[in-house]
Image 1: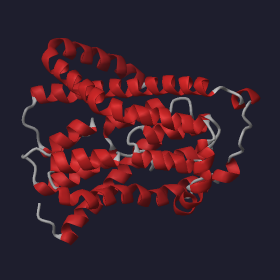
Image 2: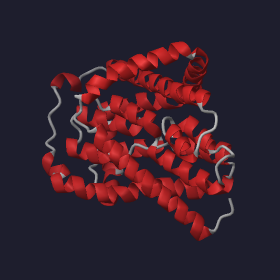
Image 3: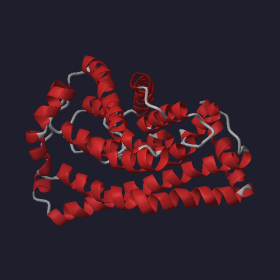
Length: 318
C-alpha cells in the first residue's frame, strides 16, 4: 500500500529535479544512450536474435543432446536448461534472463527450473570483464584469469545452495510435462519465425537502452550535488549501473583493496539497472525478480569474500 502511495510523489520529485538540473540530466542520459548505442546494441542484439531463433527451431534439440548431459551432471539442469546456462555466462546481461523466459514461454522448461536457472545464469559477459573491467579500469592484465575464475566460480558455487532449495520444492523433470506444439507452428515458415524473433529482440534491446539511460541520470544528478563521496555512498551510487559504477569505484580516492573487492562484487551483482532489465525480460512468465535479486546479492557477497581471500592468500601487490 505504501509503495503505491509513495511512488507518485517520487516520480513527481524526479520530474521536478530533471527540470531544475537539465545539464547533469542531459549528460547522464547522453552517456547512457551512447554507451548503449556504441557497445550494447551491436554486441548484444545479434545474440538476442540468434538465441531466439535457436529456442524456436530444432537447434535447441542439438544443444540438448550434446551439452545437456554435461550440464545436467554438473549443475542439475535439464538439457534445454543447458542453453540458458551457456547464453547467460557467455553473452552477458540480460541474456540469461531472456533465454530462460523464452524457454518457459515455449514450454521447454518448468517454472521451478526457470527460477533456479535465473538464480545463477544471468551474468556479466567475459568480454566486458576482460576488456573494460580488467584492462581499462583496473589496469592489471595479469588479473584477467583470476578475475574470470572468481566471477565464474561464485555463481556456480552458489548454484549448489540454490539448487537444494528449488529441488526441495519440486523436482524439475517430474514437474515438467512438455506441451505439444500446435501443428501450425511446426510448419511455420522460417522467415516468419525470423521476423518474430527480430521484433522481439528489437523490443528487448530498446528496453535495455531505456533502462541504461534512466539509471545513468541518477548518478549524474547525485555527483552534481555531492562531488565528494564517502566509501559507503560510493558503493551505493556505483550499484545503480555497472559500467559507470566500475569507473566510479576505480577512482583514486579508494584503496587498491577496496577497489578490487568492490568492483568484483558489483560485476557479480550487475547493478540495479541489470535487475530492472531482468525484470522486463521475465514479465508474464511467473519468474520472481525478488528471488533473483536476493540470490544475486548473496552471490555478490560470496564473490567479495573470495576476492578478499584471494588477495590475502596470493599476497598480490595492488
